[in-house]
Image (tube, helix red, strand yellow):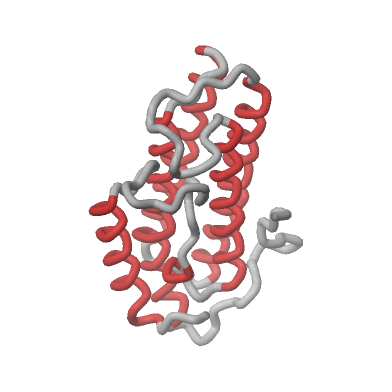
Length: 196
């Protein structure tokens, strides 16, 4: 499904407001029991195929992290999430950090290719997001096998801010460029596909 470029940013801002009103992060009232911690919505697509593929893969990885923490679904209780096995949690968080880093590198290559005027701001946001995820990983490693619901909520909020608030700005610019590349500008880069 392709969203007309003029409406992408407006629709996504409305979606972010709607999600915030419903309890943007974790354990939403009225969520279907058994649903994922983060459920992808087609309205979040940018209309750039490989970018949307990356975003969907990162969303699946966030759900894997939530399951590794012991919160397999949205319907689970909202309290601290103990885990007796830190290795799966750390591995899932490491994979998320790695996927985010690769996505940001590809995204920045795209923004350079289209001469996006707010490249510096987008890049700065990426650096901050990676630093926050890395700090979360350090704390998890040093404090033991425990990732609380608030940490998962922070990850979810970060992702939704990136996908719903930040990326629609460059997507609109991209769609107005006749010479915009359809494929990821990094040679040899593939979208971050994950098996279901």
